Length: 492
Picture (cartoon, rainbow, N blue to C red):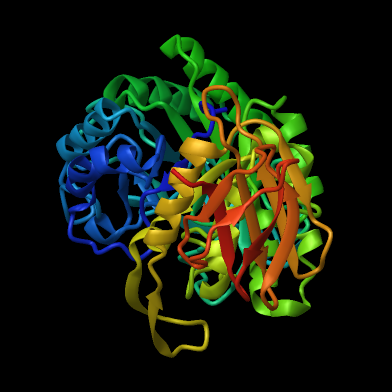
């Protein structure tokens, strides 16, 4: 876990401009981010993807090309060059911010040559159901990385380094997942589609010692090259869980330091997250996808949502020490694969629920802080223009309250379907306490204890102008406006 009251920011979204400027922007912004209370940044995949300078990062081509070699039509990545990346990391760390690198181990795309191999086609929606005979296919599975020319690693990838692929040059009409000769789908993966080992591209075979050996060697190289402080593992439900623990322990031992790790196990079933945590012996935190889903549902349902249940069946409720809490991310944002938008009116309430409570390691999403505007095609084939509101003013206020008052005992007042609240009593170094009250219905009031008798409190969100004074027992009626949140802190 990060330091007390740490806050992560996901420093990108799907639609950052492909101008190669993100690393430079981070180098310039690092001190300001540290000042507002950001203690760690999750950065996007920094290596070359199949779309070169346009690639968000998840269609991995070459893990060893951090924007250094002329491959896939460009030297730089979408975010900049290797030198700019390293400079940005150093600037952030100099400002006191930890850097977490995005690690995509599940698949590779954009092979340099095709190979002939035998395989069995399976139904894309049921990986236990073959849809044809064992047959000869031709697939893009040979990776030679000619632009890098064996620098850093001499390994070439062939079909036998992969379990499965979904494209057969001999038969482009059939949609199937082809299980390659002598392979089986990994166990210890999510059971969606019968077995969710296969996601996309060339699926890495985690039973092949050349594959796991290369990934561990890459981890050593990456830590040496970049000096990052931890990792965000992509798509962990598609890879046997044990591998992440093995890899992390290997790289930690090599680096001789404690490297943080959080996995993306995108399931709304909290039991699936518990399974992964057990399989990895609690070494890897997870994003709280069920909490995101509750926020999404609450934002859609308005005052018919029972706020007392907002933390039900979430990771932060059941395993708070391993929960990275979030409101939205690059997959849930509009027009993306897991689109499940948290409506703008509810965003401040959701951020209060992750930033101002004791449990969880909160993660702020880049467009929620900076805003965003982009266009893309939806599943219906039409193009849409999207505007994402900036919540910087409110998030800054919450971060200030988190740094200054979010300490000590926490008392919950989750006793009304539309108005909930909690207080933090503070501690010796951070006295004064804090009261938070929010409503998804009409104006709300909550009689709560802050442990400070006859003390005056003001709403730092500036939603309510009149101060509130506690009684001689340290209690008061703390208020918020309809569909809003107020954060009450001692008047200076």
